[in-house]
Length: 296
Image 1 (tube, rainbow, N blue to C red):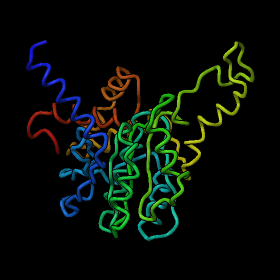
Image 2 (cartoon, helix red, strand yellow; image 1 turned 180 degrees about the vertical axis):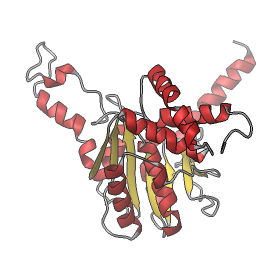
Image 3 (tube, rainbow, N blue to C red; image 1 turned 180 degrees about the horizontal axis):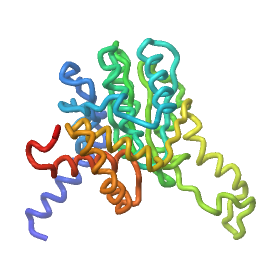
């Protein structure tokens, strides 16, 4: 090792020891006027975490989401209670992929942004910062949804316990102006194994009380007050969603009718009849039409 490399190694070790004794950086105040949606960003050690305004948030509306009427009504009502400063629940949306779980949360934001609703998107790896995020917004007059998309955990992940405490388990009460909305393909957010169903685990290191282990795994999802389940769409539902998006792109009724068989082949190739697949097909089909062919 050269003298320069030795110096850099010792300098890095010294910086690590200094950072260990320094107080954590206080998140800086964001520019609340720039957007109604934000992302939580983490920097390298000592750099300070912060809320980044989303300058071009999704414009999807509740009217754009079809064949999820019951789920839409439930989350819309819960969000309306929240912005009106009435009791409301944290929400967990689970089920089939591409059926509108995340889009429904974004549409609620657009619906109630003028009423003071704000959204903070937090990655699973950053859930350990939830106390800092809540403290940052606790004194604000706006109402904040902390949005965790496509959430799932493996055993031992730090974010699991952080979210569990934030939902219902800290010595301090949850802030009145914060709710957590999360989506997941897993009902209980944790992997479920065949061994979980066994009442007894053989072997010297087997779990003496396997039932309690299972209870621990499902306890996180039970801390969400409102559960909304989403299911795969039927063929007619899928085609009607395709028609909705093609119409939004300016396609005529005849063009929408002509697209049906191709839309079904598109879904078959992807193994899914979901709202996401319908949106993707509509963009492809409308984009391939000759200039001036729409509204034919």
